[in-house]
Image 1 (cartoon, rainbow, N blue to C red):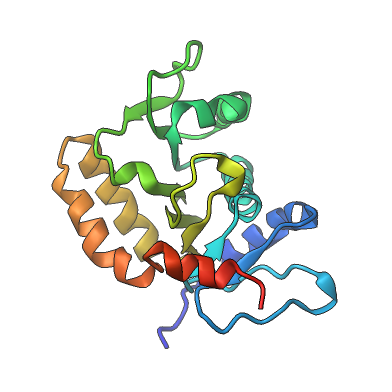
Image 2 (image 1 turned 180 degrees about the horizontal axis):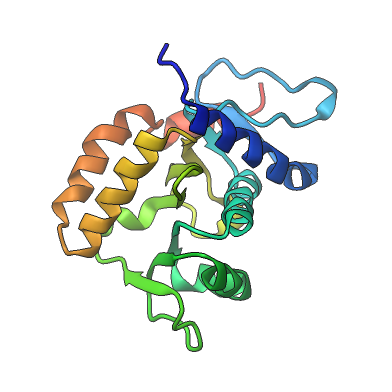
Length: 219
């Protein structure tokens, strides 16, 4: 096992304090990306371990995403990178992200569609590669605090509440900055980086859809 850095431990400690309110959401569910599903005791939800691949429903995805965003706002410096698949998904979060843009060095939003009006303080980057539109990424990187949620949609649903994502979250500064650099390269037009994403992360994510349905079907 690789030793965890002090920055990683500090980032995780701050993140866990921010996610507590979101874990109280009813019916939020996460599943380990393994055919051996174990029921949760007493009906309570536990936050899945970091740096391990999991299946996330939309409520769990939002919980981790908002905790990272809150963490970024509390730190008040650094860069926040988020993918929204389509700009329509960003609209409900518009005011939240405008407030974050006032506090952070940079807020970059990746999405298909035209950027909304009145959000000039946010850097909008269009998604041209069809595979990148399947990813859900929320990344925060500052001098001392680092966090990333990196997932890929694992089913074919178009309705957000029915979407299932496979991926992980991490506080490893080297991984966070590696992913951040690759998004910077994509913003420069280097579409070949998407192929790297596909080769590196796809083997860790359950596919095809039959595997997902087997995990989600009650025994």
